Amino acid sequence: MSFQLRCPQCGPRSVYEFRFGGEVRQRPLPDAAQEEWYRYVHTKKNQAGEQMEWWFHRSGCRQWLQAVRNTISNEVKRTWFPDEDNE
Image 1 (tube, rainbow, N blue to C red):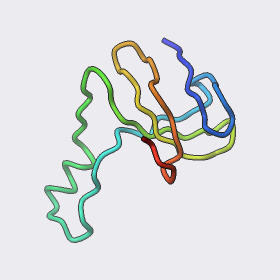
Image 2: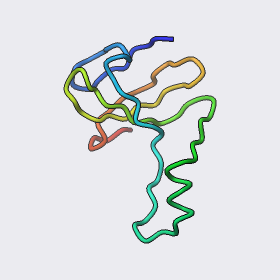
Image 3: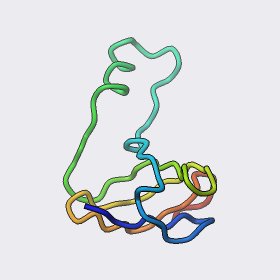
């Protein structure tokens, strides 16, 4: 299923211009236990409904952005660059 993401710099584009970077999650501290790093790298929520995600605009401005997307309908609620206020 195809859908559109709105790049904050380039505007609405096909999802095929982007690369999915995974769920936005809290990164463990550098000295965290190996098990915690394993869960961070290999365990995904993959929840049904709204999820915060990383996307890379590989065919456009080549910037990383974050998006809130409904994983059931693929409706993108909002997008922003990570250094911007996302409220």
